[in-house]
Structures are given as C-alpha cells and as structure tokens.
Length: 128
Image 1: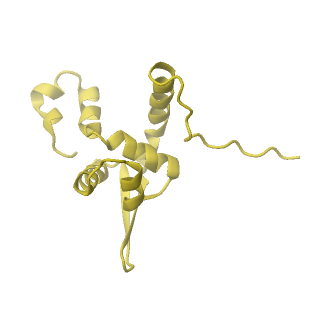
Image 2 (image 1 turned 90 degrees about the horizontal axis):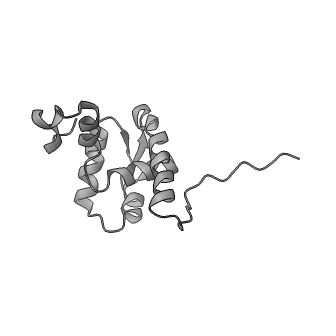
C-alpha cells in the first residue's frame, strides 16, 4: 500500500477495515479517478486531467501511481511516439464499482437531489 498518515499503528488500531480503506482512498481525487476509469473502462492520462478540472499534472501522477501500487488500477504503456499510457481497473478495482455506484446514488439522494447524472449507461435498445 502507498504510505500515508492513515497507516500509523495507532490509527489502524481504531477500525482496521475502515482505516485500510481510508489509506487507499485518501487523496482529494482518487474517488473521481476510480469513477471515471470505471465508467469509461479505459482512460488516458490527458483524458483524466481534462475531466478532473483543477488537478495538477504532478498530483494526478502521484494519485494514479498510488492507486496502481494499491492494486486498483492497471497502467499500460504502449511503445509509440509519443507514448500512449492507458489506465484500466484491475479485478480489485472492478470489485469496487458497486460501492462507487452506491456512493453516487446516496449523494444524489441526500446531497444533490436536483442533479441529473450524465454518467448512466444507456439501456440496451429493445429488440423488435
């Protein structure tokens, strides 16, 4: 796991599962990074940077590396000029999608009831 302040023994002793989750998700942008990679299936660095309005290149790099180190993201570098780097969810990251969906639903219900979510998969067309 990436090192951070939530991994100190006295912090981890409080509630180990929640402290472990907090240590992975600590960081202002990590939930949104996971959300966009989950929704779009594949994201390139530049795409993420455009979607995360206000994030610096160094912060995005750091948070992507931590999510990769923690096993949530897979980074694939293609040997092209210029290099193309794509991020996808790992199996562990994919297992987190139901929690992301639950957090979005809770937030829509309790925090942003007037929000129209554009990140909803279109239903499959009905067959005639």
